[in-house]
Length: 422
Length: 112
Image (cartoon, rainbow over all chains, first blue to last red; front, top):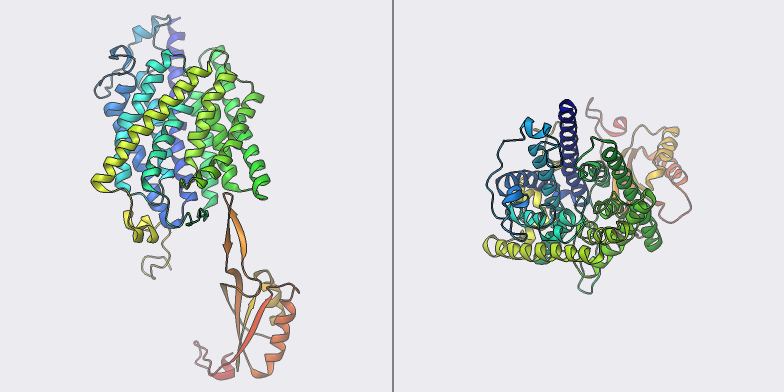
């Protein structure tokens, strides 16, 4: 019996770690998606942002974020978790594991940290695409410190850490709200303060498209995110080591995949119907919309229902992107629509797919996450703006933030014969 | 000597090259260019919003030939590049004062 418990512990820990590694790879997906949808003169900077924000998220979550989000028995109240110091290296004793029973740990504590830390980075990655091509690099990175160390962990505690939203019966399986809506709300606050890219909107409300430089990269990024999502949702089942759990994980994988497929088909059809052409970038956003939509509840629906939930997300995302452009909210990659608007749909959809969920609890969670993240982010962005500025100069924006912020180009071409390889 | 410059539709380049080879042209220089004429631009679509592309991609080719070959070259290009539709391009002829083959130092018609 002890050997079986130890083996199950090892298996669940291994599954957790591999799921976390898949989610970590989503950082590459965001980096490629965003690099593909900006102009080539802003490529190196957005790549710098993506790898730097990942690192900052890891450091801040280790220092304070994890303690805030998962205080365990040390929580001060269901509203305020308290501060709980830096992550240590201690883990479960063998005796505690083999004791069995409902309270026995069934995976390593540090595997839990690893799985959670990559989610913080995902939330932060959402912000970087929306503010692309015009924000100062270091203003963004300072925001990342506050977001990953405090703003995200607080609302994460309210749901996953056992706080008041959890006690209320709010359902969010893998984070349509806690991760995606949270990231999008922070992005929206940033974009409102930052303003649109120069030239995006005409004086009479015209929209001037700024086409992305590399659609193969954007497509690769979308496929990477799709792959990573199996870890994101599949890992959130937290366990795989018995028949019931293994079946549950398989259903989560299938539903996650089906929702993405539904999102692609729906977005492609809507784009074709609205524009007369099948816009690739909208189709890619459709895949991500399907994934975000199913993230709040990938376990309860049948595969057919999951496809429909994703398809609704795919329809929603196209209209949302067009609507935000009407409002002159400039989001180069569609992050606010994909993760915010569809994230909200995902939370609401749970009320229809999961019998145990209630619409009122879902809406309470939705508005709590939205208001908390938007208001705190807005304040932080404003403080950063006052202290150090938030936007590059008009000339720097014209020349590209690669040169202004990184001092290099992503694709240097005319460098002369020295060093160019000619 | 004359320098014949032609602006043609990119997909006609291979046909034009073959036609010129057949009449004995020894070499051409090709550049990818953009411009507009009566064909004007066209509209493209990105994320639901239209934008006008004012300059269309064309291929510019330059052929330096002896005076006696000029008419044949014009005829060959005009025939090979013709689709009958708007945007087929134009041919310009310039007089060419001098030519030098860098390898041997030959000048004039011998260098062509």
